Length: 430
Image (tube, rainbow, N blue to C red):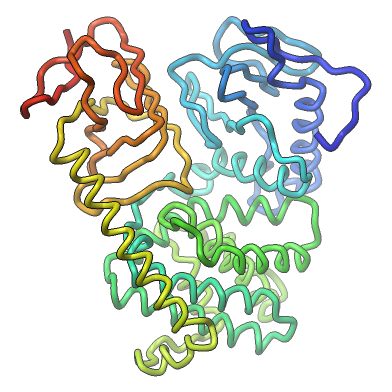
């Protein structure tokens, strides 16, 4: 991408396109291996490199660094090429393929080497995290789309950014302590949110932290990079799936510095547990006092834009409530097509997810793969809170395999049948 090459090898799709440059793919695999070799397992006690593949979403063309566990793939140079099987979803994630753990990254990769390395190492971390005792977790964190949740998160982000920018230890921990207090304000509004936030920070925050730590930069430089990312993260459209990339990574970096200053070594990575809280561990390390009253916390929040955020988030909350009502009208009250989620395999954009409280989670775009076939959604799907059903707008008739904003590829043995409401349908076994 930023690299000029004299000759390239490509996978050619049936339409004659060349979506993946094999020479570039080989280079990216080599970059990841060099990063892993340089680390030599020091960060997590084991090498980060492993089974990795790049996939072009539009054609399903893929390139793997190791031999896939199915037939139909060709070895070209040091890589394996072919088409990703239809039962495997496409996303940046880690997945099991014939009892083998693989990491997938969608093609094309970022041009910037630091961003590219962060992304690839992030996904490789997900492959080793079960061995570290970190469970895969994807909680809704619906509080992050509410007025109070967004308000106190953004103030926390600004305080964390200040802490990461600080060069003096006392200033850094003073700002970090304020971030913890702003976080506590969110928990006072949503007492049940802590467990979900901690879980996503372990899952996505540590993956992102690993990407920052191993991408080849100097750690203080990566802290400054992250501090700038937190600054620009204020004002995003949605946080339910995205916040942990910022907060989890920030608390991990702050723990690095806090422990190195006290113990001349970083200890917390050796004490990872499934129910660990990065924020609590940091609070304990710096001896933060979290008993401050609400009025005093609000005064501390004012220099971080508290009053302006109140205005902007008030406007946004009204818009969000209106959007929620529109979704309920179309996907709960209106005519629908309901799919059973037998074994959920879903690809989606985490930056657009819209939690709906008791109704479930709304995905503006997604691809769902199940035993009944493949559902490609371009204009909304509502997945229930228990992940047992998916809902799209109803087609005109039971014979239609496409409808408003969706297209269905149906597996043999399944059919669309009338639903419980007039004009509604459900997918059932034939």
